[in-house]
Image 1: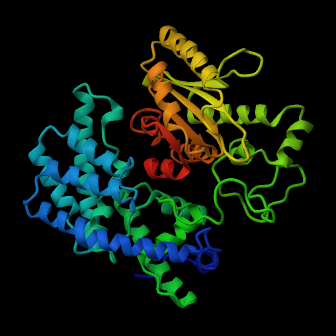
Image 2 (image 1 turned 135 degrees about the vertical axis):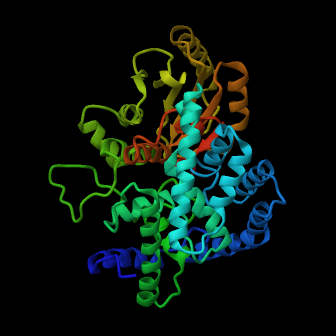
Image 3 (image 1 turned 45 degrees about the vertical axis):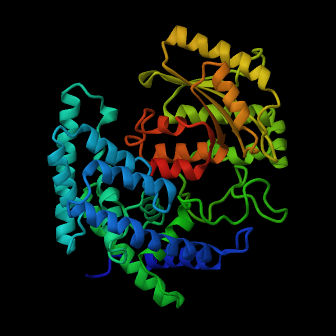
Length: 464
């Protein structure tokens, strides 16, 4: 096949590849390429020892559909190397089986779709056929009284099928990762057409072309996994991989990732982020950077109040009905965000902390206003679920007891400790795919259904 990328596009991709190879080590002393090489060995081991035999046994009729679905879920929860437990993986799998009115037909359609194709024409045919089936059972589900949230999304089909294809032939079929798609768009390498089969074919060809180019330009052997790693390095490793330095306070001599906006700013390159500055600056605000404190003071406010306003803006951009509370209103949370269609509310507090926030320092006041606000919201709005968020830079590992106490002694369903960059990741996902990322159980709400710390990596994995 003829080359898809122009020399200019290849050069942009090569620059990212070179940055990946030259990146400094983690605090544990390993470079990104060493981290990914170790992960690749583990992925290959899990494929050969667990996943591939399971898929072959299912396709051969030795494992029933229900058992196959459960075992795939269990393996991916224990060994999180693919991001399969998110919306486009296991959740999609569950929805397909749940809405199917004929499980025997569902079993046959799944087996025909996930069997590794012999060539690209057959791959394209399988994507189209399976997407048609998914659309049909989704429409029947809604027509019979089911919710739109409960039907499987067609956009998940390429990721779902390519995951199983790569298990069976890992050097031939790249997984259709949302992060890789976004990175390719940001680098202006490709613009998807929204025709699922054609987009996967182009995605595959670009991976193959770049694997050859990267190998030639670097002297290192690059396969499909290697190209994935370059894209993860550029766009954010969805599996919690290498970082330049640990979360928290950056090294003294490091430069901030983003300058404080000003009239004199100039751009070396056009911006790639979908996130507006009022939200993208949240992680730096959460750290309480001195320069931002001075900027807030010059603007006639405090950094703490500016942080609250930026958080409120983030919830508004996500599509919530929001209200900023906090200062001057007595013992109340800093704000709330409602999703009336999905019958839930988020009560949230913002904590600016350079070293992270420790739960339990003001838990009595928290319990009082959670009880008051949640009961009022349930009474006046008829809401079914209440979630309590604390939003900060990071959290000390001492929160289990206070979370347990809050859930037992108040009306909140879950307590989420949201790292500031996780909220940024939510906005990024929503701005990129506004029709795909809903506020309901098939979207953001599923992130809030488990108490504890919520990171940007977890957001990307579940919404990717």
